[in-house]
Amino acid sequence: MSRWLHARGTQLCAALAGALLSVGEAQAQAVNPHPYAMRLPPAQPLSAMARLGERLFHDPRLSASGRMSCVSCHSPAHAYGPPGRASVVLGGPDGRTAGFRAVPSLRYLYRQPPFTIGPDTESGNDQYLSLQQQAQQSLGHLRAVKSAQVPQAAAANLVPQGGLFWDGRVNTLQQEANGPIFNPAEMDGGTTATVVAKLEAYYRQDFETLFGPYLFNNPKLVIDEAMFAIGRYQIESADFHPFTSKFDAWLAGRARFSAAERRGYQAFNDPSKGNCAACHLDQPTPDGRPPLFTDFQYEALGVPRNPEIPANRNPRYVDLGICGPYRTDLRTQTRYCGMFLTPSLRNVATRRVFFHNGVFHSLRQVLEWYVYRDLQPERFYPRDASGHVVKYDDLPPRYRGNVDTVDAPFNRHPGDPPALSEAQIEDVIAFLDTLTDGYPADADHAHSTVRPTAAASIAASSPASDGPATGRWIAEWPSYALRGGAPAR
Ligand code: HEC
Ligand code: HEC
Image 1 (cartoon, rainbow, N blue to C red):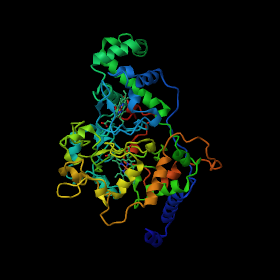
Image 2 (cartoon, rainbow, N blue to C red):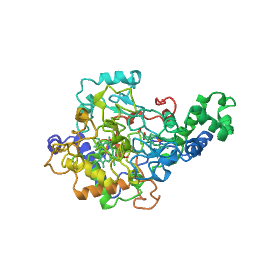
Image 3 (cartoon, rainbow, N blue to C red):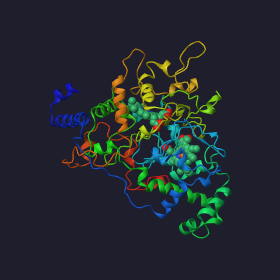
Image 4 (cartoon, helix red, strand yellow):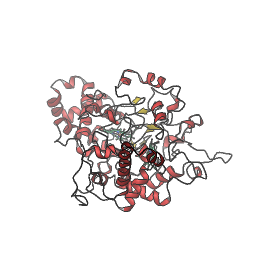
């Protein structure tokens, strides 16, 4: 790169060098040299609909046990993620039926696009193809992983993206709430009639005021409207997208990174070190939205099988993510087997359960696995009868080729130096701690003299300012997160 810069010496190069410098500069400073004015979701009082949703969200009476509501698993004190360290939460009528996957945080889902397969097409043409057709188009590409390092390769690859749940099987928060209320391993609410009878007993007045006097003649509609209200609550309440972390304050020029946080941020971004930002995007979007630390895409990382999940006692049970068993429409698209959604890392330090199967219980374990997965696999994976380490043991052998071995830090071989040193692992953890909401405003007056500049400044100077999916979600308020599923234009 530097040779090329010297050889040309044009104005363009000077501009480019300036841009590159400011990235380096931005990353090397305790204070963000390009403070940034964020476009945040509007904060308004909750509508009557959202207030009803809030009460339903917290109401244990809708569950079979009478003791479980959404907050039992999505704890407000833990960024609406799991309150404890159990890999999977117990639910059902007696609170003893185990789930199958780790509970995700419900924060920052407001910009989650619907599930699609393909490169980002600005025109949105892919909306007209069925998922089977989209998957068919991507045949001929050997592996479905994106390669964050090689843009051409990434463009040729058709990668699943968007959707809710670890496998993207649902598109809207409204559809989503349906699952847990009726899921036998969760709230186990029973039949539609049982749940509607409870809603009528406890909420008749509210429902009739909001939805009209004849609503209870149509039980299915009652459930739909209840789910709509719960979705509306998650969209409207600022508590689901507060953007009050130290990192947000740093972006805005209102906080200083400690030395460890600053080094961690650098290692998180550095393509030859953590390379975390290749998938967990950390730059504001060009239109001024704060980064969510996900590219909304799916990857097979090959995390170890978790013996703490009761279902895993059956050796024939495997969770293949996009190709099943909890979604069935892409079962035959075997190159997606093992792929799970890249989660946001905001508030990740409040969790004690990591990855789709909750196999790790501390950020230290997660980071060590990222760094040593391929260097010292024996630390994480069991040995077979003949003593060989079984890498990616939570996938049947025929799908292990789907696992990402291209993107750093996954491109290492035994004997290579680790992507992050022990000290850098600690630094990255310190940086991840800055993503926890609730950093006191004005805790640090470090930069109060500097006025936020236009969104363009950091976006223009960022190497990977936007992921393939984010540019499309520019509608001012995400009505697509409810009902239709398609972005409102
Ligand atoms: C027994 C625990 C439990 C309860 C109760 C529960 N959930 Fe969940 N929730 C989960 C698990 C586990 C997942 C991930 C499942 C998967 O990916 O297959 C999840 C996923 C979600 C997601 C998708 C999040 C994402 O990042 O994609 C939403 C939204 C959600 N739940 C909302 C709710 C609502 C609303 C309620 C109450 C009506 C509720 N949940 C009750 C355990 C629970
Ligand atoms: C190639 C894309 C990619 C890269 C690079 C990457 N991640 Fe991830 N990350 C993912 C995916 C996909 C998952 C979910 C995988 C699963 O559950 O099977 C994940 C999950 C996580 C989780 C668990 C979050 C939760 O809620 O359970 C943490 C923490 C994490 N990543 C941190 C990092 C850090 C730190 C780095 C850099 C060292 C990094 N990631 C690099 C794609 C990536």
